Length: 257
Length: 201
Image (cartoon, rainbow over all chains, first blue to last red; front, side):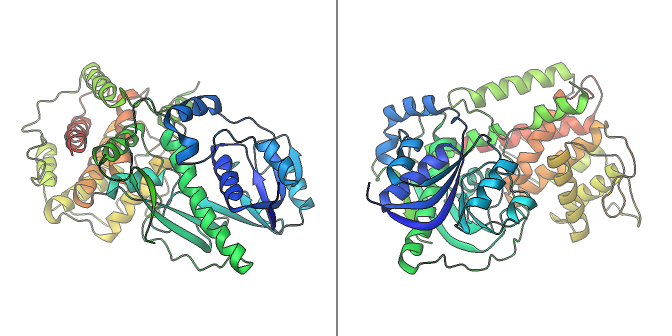
């Protein structure tokens, strides 16, 4: 497969998020130079593929049927396999030390330890919220509850969570009915999708300019959002459904930044 | 499983599954059942219903707790319950909190979210001065004040923590179960009102 190889690495934890990231790379015709592949299985993959066939996730969002191993083979990526799901495992450290790339796209595997962050690499993370306003792992539910907005930010990771220089931010608007038979949609499709679309914006910038332009992240005015209780998550989804308008275009769309 | 492990398990929601068909109705039913089993009494005067939730809730809470206002915060106060009661009285009077108390509430909220425990005494740096953490009234007062703050600011972070605290009040090994805990009754009443309002909007 003909792809342009970017001098960046990918720390790949198999997940729906990493499928979304590989899908945008495929769409852009680019591939990472090297991959550290954590050899773990993807939770809920079968269920999401079944749900995806019914609700057209592949056509509307990203390719949930993508085969990670085959894609990396097709791209001819140098792949370092590790048998752990933790980004802080010594095996990952050893693999990262072998990578020539100094910029590594992070796809998950825990909160990066000081030891991982101090290996001479910079890690790039896509967070599902508009930084610095929306920090915390479930912050996109908060932004949906607050004003039905969605956003993601790509930034260079630091020891302190959700801080670091910003590479790209993207706002989204949503007109979508989440059906009762789509319990996996928000966490396993919507969240990875907005992250991947914002990563795409960062990669487009990289392809054009040969580097990730960055700007400082302003100091957060309020504390990070705490992990959301399932009750409020359900209320957030209800809110999305209440504002669904079948006469308008259906989906999740890029909005003005 | 020891007591704290059980509490952590109850309050850990990072990977909770969604049940879009039944969750909210199931939640309401199980909340009603837990409250009934807890024997918490709901004869509070005029519980803030969806209709009158716009009234001065701080005033209403103070009346229910027989709290004088203004409540004066003495220098060096370390009792968590008193810090929280003074905060409630402040909200009743001005719908706001002075920065010093805001910092205390933010700190206690963070401690609850991270460690799932609130101690009965803290020093001015919010370091615990007691090993006692099984007083339901401390948790209930924090839940009340977070709900009052949510009422004023609309910040869902506050109602989110309050719902978790209420879970703990009803389901922890040292819960408000079978105890006469006026603060817990008020915390549950407020939650019911806010949930009805949020569910309807």
